[in-house]
Amino acid sequence: MIMAVLALTLTANAQKFGYVNTQELFMLMPELKDVQARMDSLNKQYENMLMSMQEEYQKKYQDYQQKQSTLTDAMRQIQEEELYSMQQRLQTTYQTAQQDVEQKRTEYLKPVHEKMGKAIQEVGSANNYTYIFDSAATVYIAPDADNVMPLVKAKLGIK
Image (cartoon, rainbow, N blue to C red):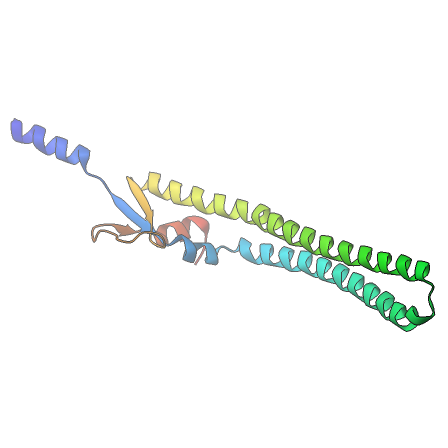
């Protein structure tokens, strides 16, 4: 009787461990192609805008340099202020573009991370895993832990 209770207790306390390399899995996600295409498009739009602004600034600056010796002090000051203002707008636009690109990257990748996390949770639940560790971030994985990467890939439809 005591042995049966002990065996039942040991079985009830048995824990099942698994691991998955989330970095590798993330790189296999098919949605990344769409995210990359959207990011490329956004980067190209900002690149074109900044290039246009830069060309306009360069043209204005060259024009200023050619006419500088013939300008009155007041006209020179006005054009210098205009050049400075253009330079500031260019710098501000560049900084805004960087921030927007980073914000969009986070926004576009969030559903991919959520889908991956949900699949890992579902695999864990369906296969009675107590814990599933990230092998990309874990220093040591016990020899009796299962690699659940094939199960998660199957859940996500990744071959």
